[in-house]
Length: 366
Image 1 (cartoon, rainbow, N blue to C red):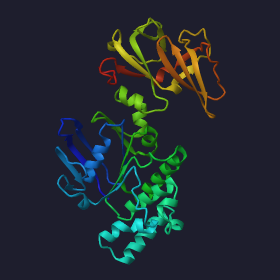
Image 2: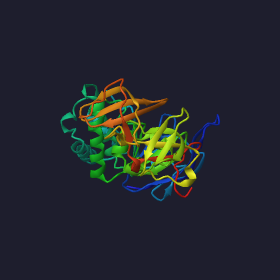
Image 3: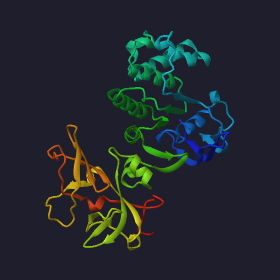
Image 4: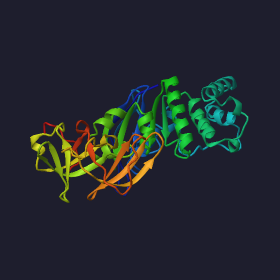
């Protein structure tokens, strides 16, 4: 296996569009690194540059200790799994797995051993004589993974491999990929627009927007300390609530919105003096919007409940406070009444503060 390094990688298309602006980071040897972001953010472009399917405008791309900018795709020792399974319909599963090895001139015995090894790892042994047309979506995806696995590459590249599967299959395939990575200790770079996939699979996550890298960190570090409003609202389901207005101190921290609404942030909200009387955005996760113990508490406010979504082990409530929409996550024992105000408070220790203009996270040194 090998590390993959990006040093000031830039991709500019002939029409002037910047696909990737300036990517500098490293996927460590044996790491499962996830590139995540909305459609058009540049994540697949980065993956295709690793594979050699997209040229690099400037910068250096390394696989192991070798710069591969001008190395042909077939000589990079990588294997790629695409969104479409791209299986040969007239071939059996065994023939699909063996095809690339035959092209590379491996012996029949070596091909048989590698095909059997991949079939054992991916539980495809009973399907080797079947053709893709009789397989389920999940089984076809396992064959596509197996076709990459038999090559014993230095790096696995996975481009939204689960997007064609239904929700249940996506969950089971996420487990399969995580298990496969743990067994192989392989370097894997995985592209997805699905933040749940990113959070559950990635050892580290690269968050991208408009060709720019927004933040690189472990899943929980990104969730707990997002660098800016984009990362804060992109990761997490439901998304982080963002309250906009001006901060004041009045028997605790208070946010005054443009509609004259006051949202108390509590006495434990750690706000710096330099944040006062300026435009800010305050982020609060749905699980940190809490039903008030007493409506008479000074730190409460009362949004109106608009929609209640019980989903079994938890309840989501969409509420409105003036022009501000809020989503809260409750225990199933709490079932708010639609159309009625509900006394709420925020968990002061879990607030996130961002500059109201730039969207960058505020620190106490600013």
